[in-house]
Image (cartoon, rainbow over all chains, first blue to last red; front, side, top):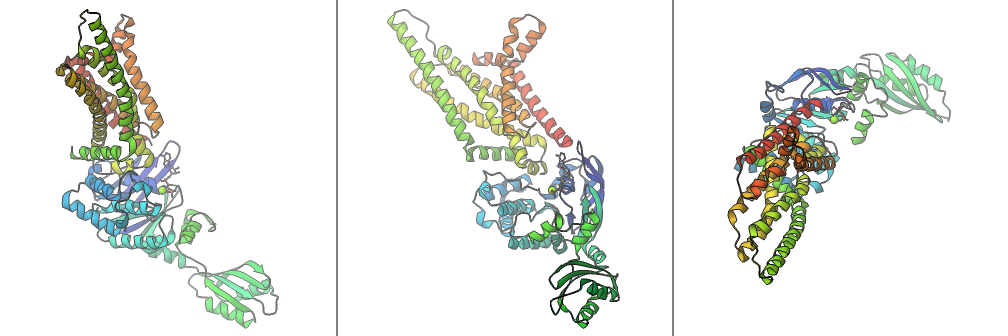
Length: 329
Length: 254
Ligand SMILES: Nc1ncnc2c1ncn2[C@@H]1O[C@H](COP(=O)(O)OP(=O)(O)OP(=O)(O)O)[C@@H](O)[C@H]1O
Ligand SMILES: [Mg+2]
């Protein structure tokens, strides 16, 4: 449905998108993932014929964005990064205007307006001025205008930005329910969002394509080696970290043990297993049998987040994308 | 064309559902009202004086009241039109709504014509306000209505050209103040080009010919001159054409 080949966009001083290629099959949901300034918005703008590419080609439903922009535009619903709202218009009036722009009229238009108001939960602000809506409602109206003409392809730039948790879930459900009959590309920095809604991920960083794969494959790639967090406590108020560490290292299947930090008689370890080995049971037994308390044992969040950070070459999960994702959850 | 009308309708609705149209109408009303009052006052004292002195001056409402007033309408328009056009594209670019328009299945030219048409209609509302004043003259005097109609055609054409220029300038920037100020400067220059007729050289004639006012004179006198009509229409086409070019090139550059 969407076919991108060697797509490039150069600005005066930067190359925002650098030879990106990927494909999206009909009915799929693709997550477009990347840190700030990666070139997500720029790529989407090229797909929607807002910006012409510097080189490379992109086709939507078989139509080239440069050669037949009209045909492409007819088939696309687009939610830009900032919802394109006119503050002096009321919600229903605005949706009617957008519907007319997309070629709807009469009873059909009215039906679609009612439908999208319902679907995007904006029915209660139908007669409110757009300029007076809260950020979340603005986002929802933006989503409503994107789907008003029931387009084949939906391009959503950060569709859940600024929504409350309940609404985030509803929006994700909405997006998921649209898949199948619609082909959807959505951009986000929130990794769990991709895990929950998308089938396919395209990861870009600094304008370059880093990985494109199905969510399941990427997760499997991440799961190869397991990383486990352990909290061990001493019984009588003291604990020799180095002893514990040696003990843990001797458990079979463990490749690396790092002592993160120690508070009084409690110590925190991060244990990495060899590929494909399950070591949690053995670790627990080793700790308990040596007479220490096992306060906590859990797998470190090894998810897309880590793959993403590995792939984009950032390794401090405390800041940037990962932290943002974690906060918004 | 349906798309241009949709855009035009939306623009008109934003003019009239925000204070823009009402503020412009009020200010216009105050300014033109004063001009009308002063012009009529002068005319009345003049008539009374001429009757008292017993001499018969030729008294002509068209020549002495209507024509100067209509010329003033054009001058007031020079100040008001940049205020109408400055937001036309600059605002859409700043708020990002241009992204909606450009990614919808309509042509750039349809967007431009729709917006220009809406600005024209708003200006016609302002003109309508002046028509109401002149209707009073018909009630109490007996002016000739034909030159008045022709003068209005001239005013509308002239405004069309000025609005097309303003639309073009607004498409170059996302800053409304810059768009408004530049339009104002350009229009004033085009206006006063008429003064370059002090010289007999060829270039002076060309400059003077390009002036906006020089072409409105025949209309104001109630004479339709095809040349002047063509001049304004050409300006309108050029303005809208360059706006289309600018929309395209801005997309390529940014
Ligand atoms: N109009 C422009 N002129 C020059 N450079 C630009 C322009 N727009 C974007 N860029 C640059 O292109 C790069 C990619 O920007 P883009 O907006 O596509 O990133 P993004 O992935 O959408 O980021 P974010 O997650 O913050 O939305 C950035 O380095 C940005 O500075
Ligand atoms: Mg972006």
